[in-house]
Image (cartoon, rainbow, N blue to C red; front, side, top):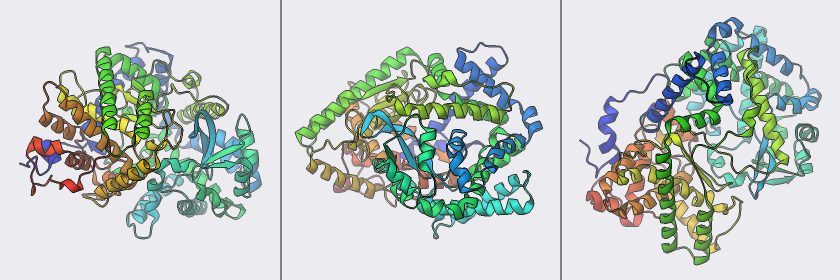
Length: 630
């Protein structure tokens, strides 16, 4: 049996991993995944009961969600319609056959949710988060990240081959002639390869303050070249924006290389194929399964979700917030909510003490950091009411599934565009109550803890305080730490991008950040090496969160640090398919679960004294290699 001193993760989770089985339709099992499965099972049962009339819908939103669920579950109707609903939708796209035609209809294409050669939307202004701004960036690539397109990445051609096989099979069911099917596919792959040359990688996106680049409207118009951005924006938006936030300046500078009169047909064919494939999940069962084959290959899944799971997940993706409110009200007790809220307040108090005792921060920086903590908004469990957009979302019971779902999505999109002229709603929640997760939003300086994560092994009234602190306590402090990671540290107490540090302090923080990058960079896993830059923000948050939770645990009357560290390792319990782990190494800003469990504890002195870890043990790290930031 593995000794804790050699491998904490294996000592705690090794026996479990020997018998744990990953479901055919899932990429992982254990930890977060098991809790999510339990939540899904509960809610699917409730959806089914309402659909059968055995239970009343708790509100109008849940009733609409069940209507969509029933429509998605009606595979008799879906199979009878076959591919026709998406062919009907593609008619409008086929009518745009030139740059002039595109310029005339670009805004309507956006409103109708067709693929454009760029992405745009409305978001809070990073430097004035009370107001919204219009943003533009590049479109998505077919493969998960630009790194897959590198000549030295063997996964790229293999995955593109799988995607092409899927696309060929679905194109063969359209009304295109065989020679046109081949031309559309070739043009799609060529246009996608060109996109990959001009857009950011996941590593670049991980530094999200760099997505804030204000441009004068007229300058953006000029850089878009033959595309009439002025007409597009003024037709699309409720007011003319004087400023546009460009998330990726290189993409804008190079846009005319991607999209111009000469490449228009490539774009048109790309848009057709992308739109066709993105809608297979709303069509017949055969098309649903075939259209999901590439994403399943990315994660190594052996099977598609059952029809019932598919129908629930589709409805959930549209009505997630009101479903989360129902889950919170039904399955999350007020006693637990009050108890966890106290724990959050306790963690913030610990953080203040740790900041006050910091030996590398000047007092003025400490003071501003504490102001940020005092202002931090806590969103616990689930919101009091659903966002106003849900009042507008109604299921057309006479329409086919694709048409009904598209109309709802168009309504939501139009609503969000209208927010450009309205103040930012700081009461919005970033996550629904039934999601097993938590997050920090730097632009709102708020922390969201959905009800679904507030259960064992993260948290339970039946667990000891030491166990809860090693679980949810560390997660809570992790989210607090995001306010002071390499990204969050650049935002003030109101969520505005602002330099509130003393220069010497920030220079030292950058040195510590690089040390954290170096600690993880190149660490080997079964799926490949870790990219330290990609995962640094989450690792800073893990380090700060675990240290703060540990200090809080040490203040308990009945401290049990062995239970603390053991539960910390248990919450990261995960068994995953190799393909999925390879995918995460490319795009996920979190380190692999085993490394999250094992590396951070080695930075803490109490790890060594609690388990008598000595030089020569696998989990020993020399004192001069240990990193403390927060």
